[in-house]
Amino acid sequence: MSSSATTAAAPPQMTRGRTVALVTVLILGVLAYQLNSSMLSPALPDMADRLGESIDAISQVISLFFLAGAVGGVVLARWSDFIGRRRMFILVLSTLMVGTIICLVAPNLPLLLAGRVLQGATAAAFPLAYILLNENLSRKAFATAMGVVTAVNGGLGGLDAYLGGALADSFGFRSIFVVILVFGVIGLVAIWLVVPRDGAPRSAGKMDWWGAALFSIVLIALTYFVSEGSSKGWLDPMTLLWAAITIAAFVGFWFLEKRTTHPLVAVEHLRSRQVWPMIATTVLTLCGVFAVINFTLVVLSQNTEVGLGLNGGMSALLVLTPPALIGVAAAPISGWLAGKFGWIRMLRIGLAICILGIAIVAVFPTVFSAIIVAVVLFGIAYNGLALTTVNGLGVLLSPKAEPGILPGLNGAAFGIGASLGIAVVAPYVAQSTREGFITGLVISCGLAALALIASLFIRPPAGEKV
Image (cartoon, rainbow, N blue to C red):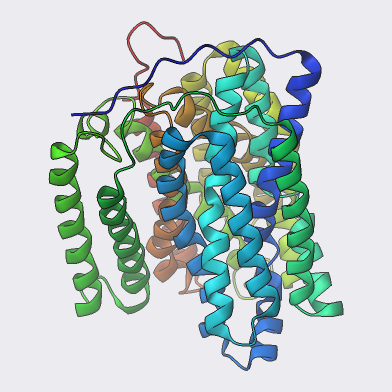
């Protein structure tokens, strides 16, 4: 039996000035988390050197961060239905600052990882921002604002990664955490001063902590299943063990939620055309497109035998920076288009263009101009249309009684999709042959096509137009 929403008065119509102020402080609120996900990668060698660890061991700084984000995004977004968005946002940013301070002073890797887990759990900042926009703005203003905030989700046009590398080279990796701490403090103060105070809870009852624990085990086991499978093989005993734990935990979670009065995720929601197709679309979109941009094209552009033979810096400038920069401009426009012509329609258009971009590279994998065309298409269609619409639909399609459910699940789907997509194509791309690259790209194109097919099953609630 699912929980029911308590009656709450509709928020007063915000003036243009208050709307701008709210969007601005929400950007500040999510920026500290985003910098945590984008600035640290170039600093991994410096971390390994200063802490006396191998690169393989230090890579956990990234993997555990995103794993904690998958768990925290679901659990904390749902908890905010009970304690309020503003309170949860303040809690999230306070946790981020504690984690950042731990990372700043950590003398060894275990303590650094503990801080990174706390930082990663604050991934709930993005779904909280999206929900606050939906609850406080008109539908028209929400559409454009979603695009603006989503643009931050893609980073700062590649400048954040560059800044992270420059800081690590000049002052060491700890200087990055100083910058993040400053943004965290600014974000916390801004949220405290500007975000409207919480009214009545959106959901009746109490938080389902047993369900949260089981669902966390599902996400953790699934992540390690993908990780072990990609590195040791999908039939390796440890891989199969993680698969068994994932299945057992999900079955336990399913039956627990059916018997809980106020579940973390009601079973009937998981079966609805608003939830499961949306999650499937997000996972498959990340599987198909994210892996191409952030893995296959990067490796292909640096390959000296059949690729372009670029160095790391030029590869980043060619493959990673242009889509990010284009996305900064395209995301707000995408939100406006979605509000005018329909969120589901614009999602499908974005996915179709992404499929075209992957197909172009698959047919002409070593042609420089073809890669440039594809990169531009990805900036418009993926960083702009796809990311904006999947995030927007995660809010608009979420059950009215539990509005924090789908944004949290959608956030977890991002991490799972990105990990799974790279794991699937890595064995082929690692062959460093023309045939291997083409095979990886064809697989990614197929996954993106499946995302488009999954989007055809999305249906808005009865009587609503999305």
